[in-house]
Image 1 (cartoon, helix red, strand yellow):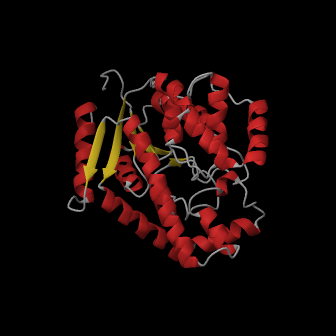
Image 2 (cartoon, helix red, strand yellow; image 1 turned 30 degrees about the vertical axis):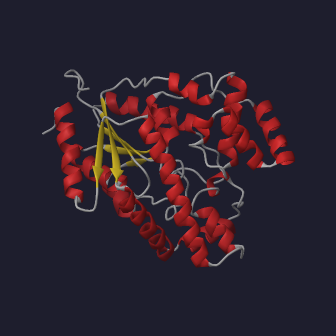
Image 3 (cartoon, helix red, strand yellow; image 1 turned 135 degrees about the vertical axis):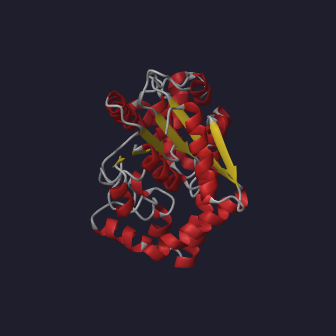
Length: 317
């Protein structure tokens, strides 16, 4: 909602991977003379540019970006820390009259910027240790099954092969005395500045085709070499940063567990699954403007629809 007394505003851009968020954010940022905050949980790490589809060096020169290539893969970084740092940056930018675009597909990171990470959801090291010990005894599959029993709605959006996400979800369930999905549902957006949330929603056949094409392009651009360089730098394959789609499959390929074509197929399959989880978040926290499109719509059409909506809400020339 616009505010006549407010000269600056934020545009949030969300959507599944390979939906065109980066291209849209760049064009809108140039039009609005805005900087871009990357709400992507992996683009912050140095040396992980190909597998995270980080904007190119030319694009980073074209528009000022934040939270890209700022940490090493072995440096922990959470949604909570991102939210705090991003909101401090937003405060400074709004005070200076500078527009911002917050673009990314990491739902928790977007929630953190909106102020939707509840104060009561602090980490509990004792609970986390107990969950880890239980996983060592019973396996993560058993713990994921327990999460499905305790909170099926939350489990639907958690990767069954991501121990960190399973552990965190169970920790919230144990500590809160209620379903984590209920806790999140009780949270309200507490964003203090004028904003518009734009969501990209490509038709599924188009999205999956884009994913398959992107994965092969990443391989051609040197994803195996990027992963090999990270390992040679001393990064452990067990790092949370490397427990990401694209990296874990290439690590398995480099370890001889399967050939390159199998790795490509696994990345494509797991990326499609990841996109489905992003869409689940997308539907729960519906944007103000959902731009649905198929093969017949051009990028220029999508860009114009976004610009028209922004003009309806804010004073833009």
